[in-house]
Image (cartoon, rainbow, N blue to C red; front, side, top):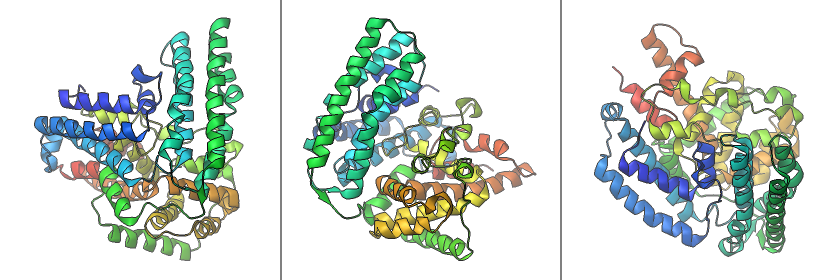
Length: 452
């Protein structure tokens, strides 16, 4: 659906400031560049939020009545836009993400390259030009890294940066050569692309030298309870108090732990879980995980109803799930939790509990790793359990939001089935859930519960 003038301005600002996400959304205007994560640029973005908020408020009331929201899709988009700005502002002011974690920088640059390589929406020539220009932009993007990350780096994040850099230094063989093999390119253009790759790898090596020299601190990174709760409210629209969430998730985790539930031994079986978070899949470094098991439930736009909102449609397309993603993107984590085999839900409960305790209680990383190893199966391997804990430290709130959203969808599924007069399948329930597109699950609940 067309966006209002104010919401169009929001989307223009979002895609300009977050070009990697823009590519994933199918908006190709900024394929040639990476974001600017310097403090100056992010301070400018905060100023932009003020002007955008005024414009959105002038055009769209901050409606709390779900019936009013149901009657005007633009109001839903306005809620979505405000949540996005709130979450990005919190991320900047927390000093926790780009200000402390070099691994996020390397991953952003890598994702920026991979998302172009896998999205074949233009001609071979256009796609090659976009990929080459984004490769050439890597030095500009990374030059702000040592200026921005000025404090000591948690050891676990330094190690994660090393792993990302090792992948970055393989792009010639892992990305460029395979891409050229499947795309028509004149020899001179191929040379241009390889030169661009060499330029990018030089910048990655220099970033690696800086990472090795940067001071480290051997403590688990924690966002803190106040910021964690604010993140749940802003990004995921979870209104439930943190203390209540803590009680519920820890009680559920303790209960299933006492019941002795454990994982299967096969990583191949784990690969079939429809809701695996990307960092769990990458942690289980196994050939069986080569296919993205979540894509089958990624909910393409045709599944959505005619009332799908503009931002909701876009959020459903994004595969680059970070704190900068449109908030509705995270609804797909909750859907996979709800629609997946029930026997896999206990693992998500454990990860949600660890997510909360790592960031709110400063749980020691070693204790969290041992807790995951006790799950058995593939996570009994220390390196795999460690990788999951590191990712939980880097994406606060994501696992808890997936757990919370999965429970909300369970309840909504029961209500929808009762209204329908028969138990709905997941395929039958999905059009109810995503009739507005991918929007935060608590907002979906408010809208669905407003139905007579």
